Length: 301
Ligand code: ADP
Image 1 (tube, rainbow, N blue to C red):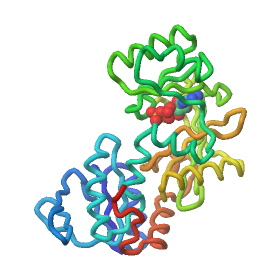
Image 2 (tube, rainbow, N blue to C red):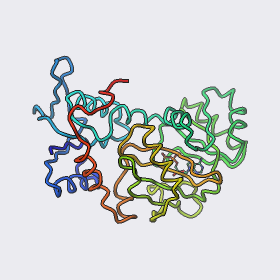
Image 3 (tube, helix red, strand yellow):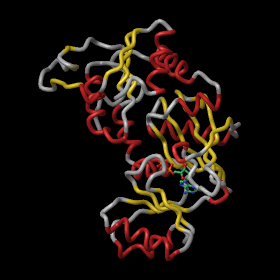
């Protein structure tokens, strides 16, 4: 197969591993920097151009689009979808999962467990918002944040009020969430491919840190999932319409609660913690499922 990987940097661990896994399995693979792709959308025959070159037709594309370039990256992916290229994750599913409120609304609609979550726009509604999610301690999250930046634990109602007020005053979009204390500063990353969790790791925050992000000094270990956790992770990925997803779960007293579904989950942490060839599993999934014009949404909706 001819496979394209949309990635800003071919030296990144995840990109390198995907190239390696595809090459090892006899596929032709090329990394394209999506910000250097440009397109002709007026013609009846959609095309994609790259650094002066008219790109050939690929059989499949693996999007690895960073959160900061979702807008342009998904437009490039949509163009490939219009050309009939099979995307392992569709543009619509990526956009859906990047919108944290929309994702949580979709997950809740389908009965997936999640921390009690509220959001508001006006400072006048802060008091009621805090009450709604069960009072302090609570977690306040910037919707635009990644890697744990902009995730704040407010221990008291007063602290919560001033942090929320400050964020809203800066015109930042936030959500306010019940603090799952019993998770003990740990979360579970479930790596889903198709309808299976192929690898899972527990990430534990550094001493005294409630955020478990590896970028914040957290450490990762292999973890055995309960059947309920497996089911929840697979269902969450399916609701988002993602074939490849990193589903982040907290272990709460009422069972697994989903925090986030990531459409470009990193491979380094999960491969190192579990010893599994996750990149190889992604390539094998593509080889099994890729067919031309298989995009469900064709970039619509
Ligand atoms: P980001 O997407 O920036 O990584 P997250 O929402 O995943 O932000 O939060 C970062 C970390 O903070 C999580 O991995 C988890 O360990 C912790 N955390 C987030 N929300 C909660 C919560 N409601 N209760 C307890 N811990 C939480």
